[in-house]
Length: 254
Image 1 (cartoon, one colour):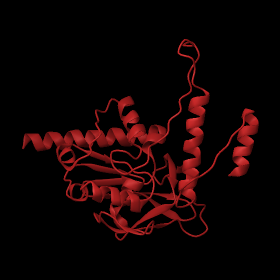
Image 2 (cartoon, helix red, strand yellow):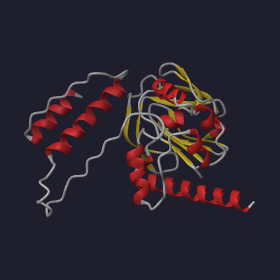
Image 3 (cartoon, rainbow, N blue to C red):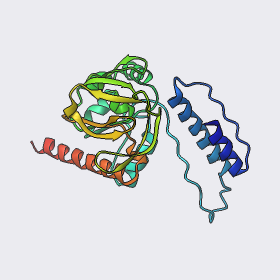
Image 4 (cartoon, helix red, strand yellow):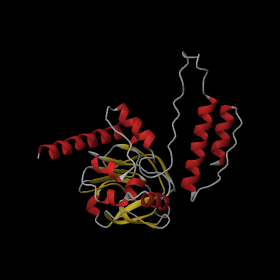
């Protein structure tokens, strides 16, 4: 990693000073480094407001937390681009009236669960009856237990979240081919291992065959990041939105 940043700074002909002040593992430290780099680039390439004819760089970074934050900004941007109406929710009452719920996540499982407990959202998520889509950590929290912490999770899907298998590069970062034949973007150090293998909807090869998606009833989850996965992610969001509309119509028409 130091060699990468040295080469990057040399090619850009700039001075680059990075330091990691916190992080529980290499995954979090690398994530923090790239977020810092993104912020630095955003400042460096900020243009005078009068220079409107020069194309502006598109730099995005995600906020850290569990629900309604996580990758909320980038997920909301993807939904906006696709014309899917969406709003952030932060209370159990708001969750209860939503036609569908996207549950993004970033960071550590233990911190995320502590946040959900502190805000009184655990029961609302466990009892949610409509379409639910967990992304990355948001999928991992659906299981019983995560070794990251360790911590008890929501317990909606029976199973555990374990570190990537020995011999696999950790964290798993970048594009990889799903068992569906499509490519998706991954950033993770832990993987879901549901007790019932029939709940696995897709897999990915990374040192071993890993779970990349699950479904149990109205709960769906993917280990990859749809908001960063181009056409593959767009199709997932569009399909989920269509499912929410059908579910809302069925409920209303009863």
